[in-house]
Structures are given as C-alpha cells and as structure tokens.
Amino acid sequence: MNIRQLRTLSAFLEHGSFSETGNQVGLSHSAVSVQMQQLETELNVEIFDRHSRPPTITPMGAEIAKLALGILDEIEKIRMFAAGENLAGSITIGFVPKTLQTLLPRVLKELRQNYPQLKVNVKSAISDELATMIRHQELDFAVLTAPTVEIPDIEIATIAAEPLYVIAPKSQIGINSDANLARSMPFIFFEKKTWLGQQIVISLQARGIFVDELMELDSFDVIEDLVLDGFGVSIVPQRLLSTPLSPDLVKLPFSNPQEVRRLVLARHINNQKTELYNFIHTYLASLADAVHES
Image (cartoon, rainbow, N blue to C red; front, side):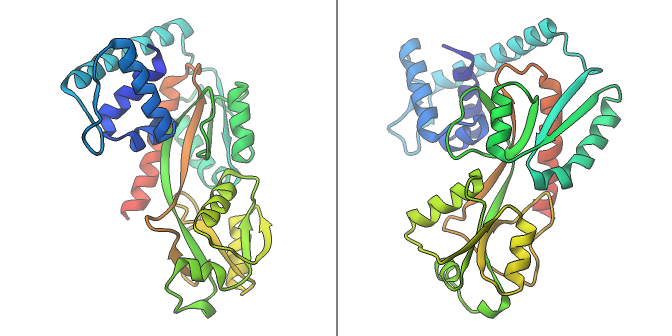
C-alpha cells in the first residue's frame, strides 16, 4: 500500500468513475484500474464491484476510502510540520506561453494579496519542457496542457477542460461535418511537438481524417488570423482562460463526444508546498468555472 494508491482511492470516492479519477490524479483509466487491483490484492478485500458497468465502489471500499482520506490528511500535516512550509519564502511557477500572458497577472495579484511576503519567480516553456523541469524539481508548479501519456513523479489537478473546434473561414459556411470541414482546405497544425499538437495528430489519424498540411505554428493567435484570412483550416481549443475564438470563424466541435484540451496545474509528488498548490489550483479553476457558466 502506498500514498498514490490512497490518493487514487479517495479521488474515486469523490468522482465515482475510473476515467474521472484518472483525470484528477493524472493517470490513465487502465493505470487507475491496475492501482486499485493491486490495493485489493494487498488488503484481500473487494473494493470495487466490477460486475456493474461502470464499476462501483463496495460498502467496504467506501469505508476504506474514508480511512484513506484521514490518513492523507495526517500525512499532509506531517509534511507541512517537517518542511516548516515558509509562505514568506519563494516559489517558481511555469506557464505555457499563452497562459503566461493571460494568467500570470491574475495569479500574481492573488498571491500578493494573500501571501504578501512571498517572492514569485516565473518561467515559460512548452508543456513537455515544463514537465521535465517539474520532474527535476526546478519548478514548484506549472500550468500546462495535460500529457498524452502518464508522466512519472508528477501530480496534476485539472484547471479547465477546453473544447476543441475545427475552425475555418466564412467561405466554408454550410459544411456541417467536422471531418469534412477539416478536409475542406489546407490544414494548419498547432506545433506537433507539443502535447496538444500530438493529441490532434493522433485523433485525426484514429478517425481516418487525412488532411492537406499547409504548415505548423506555435501560436493560436497567428493560426486564427491565417484562417480568418482564408489560408486554410485548423483545430484549436476554445480557450476559457484567454482570448476567445473570433465570432467571424466557422467552427464545429471536433469529434463526438467533443475532444478537449485539459489545462492542469502540475507539481512533483514530493513537493511540500501544498497550501500554495491548493490555493493556486482553486483560484484558476474558479476562473475557468466562471467563464464556462457565463
């Protein structure tokens, strides 16, 4: 039995499904299932009823999950006591470039109001580079796109699920299929080395949608400008925490059910600045919820 298993179990108690639990703790559906099977084997009890679809937690499992929550709370207290978490010290936060522009001023303002003695250092990079810095403990936290595969030693919490859209110029109005819209003109990819770029490539291939590639770019704003000017089509997220998509674009939800880019807050599993991590996550998630509900 280990802390990650207890965290996963307590997350299942809150979310009620392997997929939602995986989103919360940064694991795939299958990885959550394997962790829970290992825990059941070690404890020699049935935590989940796998005859039901989807699997549900058993009464015994629910009691164990509640005990796990208490254990995790006590572990956190021990960590904070041992670390002497110093909120008058410094932290280093990483942002993917577009979120740096839109979120950094808001985050700094909130931290200054609530932790006036805290010094904040900032770095900007693409998501996989930020994740590497988290793994090497060069960053305390990072706002990034959720990885396409599980990354060892990293804990993530979802900030926002941003729906993906196929976008096109007004000349393409009337096309009512996302696949046909994506094939209707030369395709502008978001940079393929990024996790979002990889997600889009994999999804197009999985659906058998073959596009006429024009170019790839690392800026959503430039991609949208080129699409508006009639150079081609693209797939981009409806960004909840930055500039929204132009109303002058033709746009269709990508895939059914609609695919999303998950924006997450990441930290190393041994990072002990939990109060700050929870504060920043709660604040950013509340921003996304406010935009989604408006």
